[in-house]
Image (cartoon, rainbow, N blue to C red):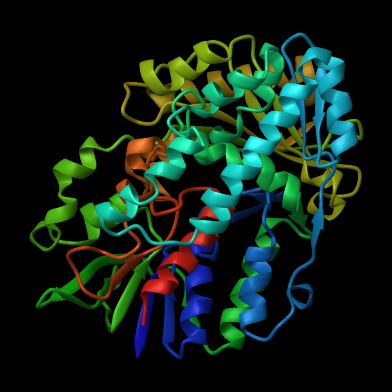
Length: 486
């Protein structure tokens, strides 16, 4: 049996391993010049930059792939914990070190607002309950019919998942600063904390249970490890091979066509490409009545990102591996990004400084960085060709005034990645960085199905499918899809 996997992001690599263990002959087709998808790696002027994911939570999902092949993760890649998980800098200069240590976390909460310690612990217990249901029990269960959703409604109501993440946090915490600290997590998967259902509050306990990790050599080292595993198992990965058509015969996939005009026959096809893009650009409309262009246009898509990869000729040992720089507004900025879809004058930033944990990612005495700002997707009139340099400068101003002093004085290399690049390079509909926005009516059954409802032998993995975006979500989507493939 021959399987073709479209795309070599984490979802594509994970499903390739699983298919190989089932005895399929697997060919992975990747449009770019190296594997990884959103986990691509840029190498520039002696610096190594992870282009996308930077945080490993639930590392057992990676271990599972190696173990099912009778291998050990550590023989392919070294994964180690990061502490603190994040350093959160408020606009007034105060910082909060977010970690997995219960005593340190209670002390941090008490330092910001002593009256909220009890509420924090109650919230964490609620997060645990949601985690046990949403991640452990349902995270890899396919939702292919409405009844699968109906069956879990009593649990969703009991766990108050009709609330938003921010709404749930507000129930337990009074400090506005702490409300930001414990509600920002939906942004890691493309969601607005005001509208993402409280099921995503499970991320807090997920991090507490499994920690936050990184890989020696960067996230690209995990990609290389999985790529080597696939090749060791007899799989094939073809680079610079974009797929331009999924062939359908008599209601079932029969193969794919590449941009070079090559037709590859297949008994099944799994797409790790952007789900909306796959349907609209690779499959003729007559074959997909359940996922028409009209339906896909009516879906709500996640925000996009503006990213700068940059290197400096000095190091900043006072920085944490992960820093979140909050702006002067929280809900107002969220409104600009998700609702008004306009580029605000202020911003909140995520700064990744991987050389704090692995100096090999930059030349000696240098520092590698990646900074991102959540911005509206391309359902807006923002001209990024005109705005990108101005916005870059505004980000540098913000970093220099908060945590990276004299950045421009020591800057030696940079690269920009805008919402236009999400659309043109990653083939992401509307330049959305995380596919569909995680709201209640786009979750579980209402999200992209892991098995195509119209075409036999066609499956999906990745951010647009159940359970959603983020590394644990994408790896779990491969588990879900695997359960559907004979």
